Length: 141
Ligand code: HEM
Image (tube, rainbow, N blue to C red; front, top):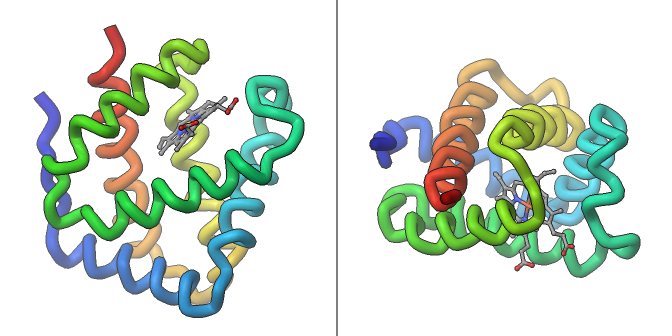
């Protein structure tokens, strides 16, 4: 059973970071930095994705917006994240791959927010992505 809660102060931390990104219209740059780190560190993952990453990138941006906006009521996100997990299972994405996604999200935050990013901010994002990943994986059968 996953603990479906993130501490309120960590939610504010994540939202503040995300607001810095969105108010600077840097979501696309953030998602691009994420994929660039992911494929550099895990070259084998590139072939799992379509050649043209534009549609994929906008889907990820949309999902990030939804999840970050919904962190206070995480249980409401559970069903759709489990479903997303099921479609990942069908794509042969294994549970061990999720940790790589989380670390590349942290690297992308570093790339975009740079020196502005503090340890507690990184820790909050890690907590959220561990929960998102755990929920997606709980949809696997
Ligand atoms: C925090 C975890 C993750 C989130 C939030 C996430 C989000 C998404 C979203 C929103 C989509 C689009 C689904 C659609 O087409 O409707 C997607 C597709 C996909 N994801 Fe993830 N994902 C996660 C983890 C992973 C991991 C660990 C991998 C492994 C490398 C991965 C690889 C893929 C691939 C290959 C696709 C399909 C691309 C295509 O052919 O359209 N994802 N993901």
